[in-house]
Amino acid sequence: MTTAQAARLIGPKALSFLKAQAADGFQEALDLQFGLYGHPVVIASVFPVGLVLLGMLAHSPEDPEVRAIAAHEAAQFAMLGEAQGWRYYNLCPEIPPDTDDLAVVTALFHMVGAHQDRLIAPLETLASNAVAPGRFRTWLADSPEARVEADRRWGVGPDPVQPEVTAHMLWALGVTGDPAHAETLRAGARWLASLQANGIWETYNYYGAAYGTYQALRLYRQVESRWPETAEEFRASRAAAREALLASQDPSGGWVARVVPHGVRDQGGRYETPAHAGALETAFALSALACLASDPAVAEASARGWEYLASLQAPDGGFAAEPYYYTIGLVPHQSRCLTTAAVLAAAAHLLHNNDR
Image (cartoon, helix red, strand yellow):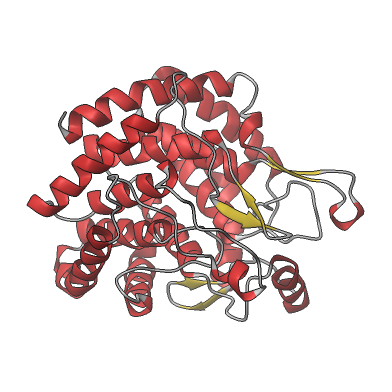
């Protein structure tokens, strides 16, 4: 089975699984916290469901059912937005709006072609929360005290700029196609290159090494597609990432999420390295490889990865829930919808050669 054949075999079944989940509003993807700040229950929907929608749109951007699902959810998100942006936990005023949520919403609204006026004020807040060109604070709050409290609760650490979050936001700004963001994108990509260590980008909130590496490489490709002269700037960084991705592939053909998020490690949280390669880390690694120029070694690694993913797909088309990112209390959020959407996005990179 070739790489493309495996992706084409997996994709339609995965998409059908997610379409079925849309019927009840992707409840399986939601993150619920009970008793947080005295609230009986708070719900995070925009970020996790938004990630699922972006995966579906990347894979099947012209599918009428996918577009209808995305448009419906985008309208719900628009109603949850505030002047400063979107909060991870809907309607929980103690947690400020954040850049990761804004990245998801920005990309989604532009892909569905609606509610873009709702982005004007939040993007102005984002600009005011930049610590340097192309580097954004995670918490979009005017009050330094609010940011400190959010950092304390979430365990972000002393650095207010998280590389994977900034990379995500920069990519979303690129999706808008607004030339006003040109220098921001280029400056941010250069900054990310300076943070690479041992070929990868470690993250504050996300499990494994592949997510942060994928976010950086996707941004490189987006920047280079618009400004080809920048390709040489990132050549060494891409080469180091290639070597790290190839070297970390498991004999099974997948990738194991061995790297612990900074936030978990810094707070003494516990994380047991999985005994086997998982679908989520494998999907992000394959997406990262798809952002690189292909060569025989990359092609072979990709083929083995897709064969392994095919072996993990459940009869209903979905994939198992695996730790994606951690939330308050060092609790990992995981969801079958999120894993399946990550696989769909990887297939989109391979089949459509796009930046989504």
